[in-house]
Length: 185
Image 1 (cartoon, rainbow, N blue to C red):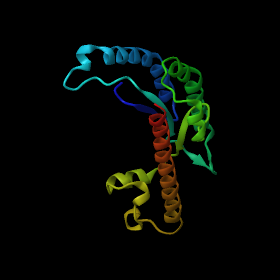
Image 2 (cartoon, rainbow, N blue to C red):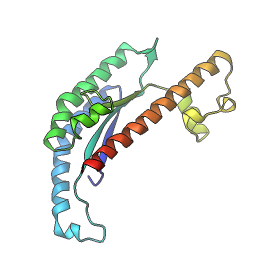
Image 3 (cartoon, one colour):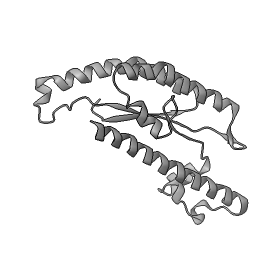
């Protein structure tokens, strides 16, 4: 509640839908508490004062789903749609009531749909484990670190480039969303 912004990472599954539903129920309580805390004279004058409540929602990230032939598999697509519907019909109204949304135009300028999905990140399978093993980002793994050859190496290098593009686009979107709010306040 002392953050300026938050986003909700999800996985294309049942538990993320449940978590969004829970978040929609608990956020109003957290917001009410934070607003009271930021107005409390004792907390305002403390050595580490409780800041003014300014929290805004940036969006959701849907991740860890399988793609076949360039498209999400049906099973994952169903969960992605459930996540987006739950955000749109349960979480978004709560965010609106509690003044936690940026202006609609700000989201639209970043190409975000009405479900406030910032990006979708598919499953990168073995690249994640190699990234962790070598303490480097997926897109910075070298051919030597991948220890692969031929078509497998080429496929993973394309996945690395896809991840890099997705990561930098997401970073740019976060900067743009948070900067637009900072400028408008």
